[in-house]
Length: 290
View 1 (tube, rainbow, N blue to C red):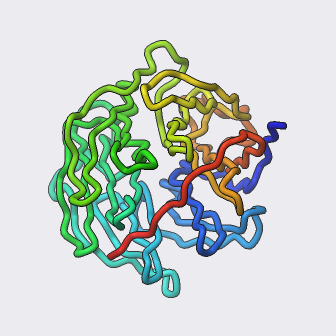
View 2: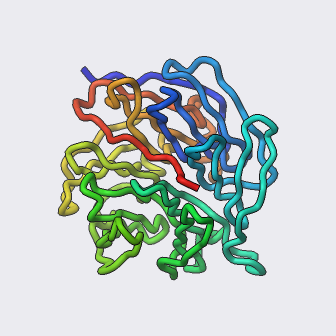
C-alpha cells in the first residue's frame, strides 16, 4: 500500500540533490540556498549539516571520502571533517548569469553536472563532465535550467531535462569515454501540469521525473510514454531518488522558498518525503572516483 511520510522537516529553502549511499546506508541531500549539504539515517534521525560558502546545485560522495559539490561558480571538494571546500575548477568564469545546478555520477566514477540561468530565462547554461583526473569537459550548451541527469541501467542512454521549456532529452551515452551523441526529445510536459525537475531511473529502466510546481512524480517508459503518476503532499517538490535497505523507498525533496506566495499555505514545503509501497526498486548510485 502506498504511504508517504515526512522523513525530515528542515524547511529547506530549495531542497535538492537527494542521494542514497548504499555503503553507508545513509541519505544525503542539499539545500541549494541554505546553502548546505545534509545527511541522515534511513529513518530521518542523526542529521548532520555542512554549511557551504555559495549556493550549491548538487553533490556526490567520493570513493576516498568527503564529497564533490557543484557550487555556484564551479566544482569543489568538500571535506566532511573540517567542513572546508577546495576549488577544483571554475566552469564559466566571468559569466554572472549561470550557476551550477543538478548533477550525478556515472558508473565509471565521472561527475556530470549542468548550469542554469539564475533568472531561469535565457539558455546560458551548459552541461559539464568532471573526470576522475579532475579535468572538465563541456558536453552540451544552450540550456536554461539543467536538471534530472540519470542513466539507463545498461549505461547506453543518458537522460537530462531543461526545466524551463519543459523538455526531457535522451542521449546515446558511451560509458567507456563519457561522451554524448544523438540528443533527442524523450518527452515534453506540454500536456502535463508542471515542468520536469530532478529525476532518477528505476531497475526496470523507467524514468521517474519530479514535476515541480504541481507536486507529482511522473514515471516514463524508455520511449517517453507516461506510465504512472503519483501525487505528492506539496506542490513544491523538486527531486527524487530510490533508497533504503532494499532501494524501494522513493525519497523526494521540496522547497520552502516563496514563489510569489504560492507555497505559503503548504506547511510541509521544504520537507523531505519518504514514499513507501511503489512496488519498484532503484539502482545503486556510484561515487565519484576522483
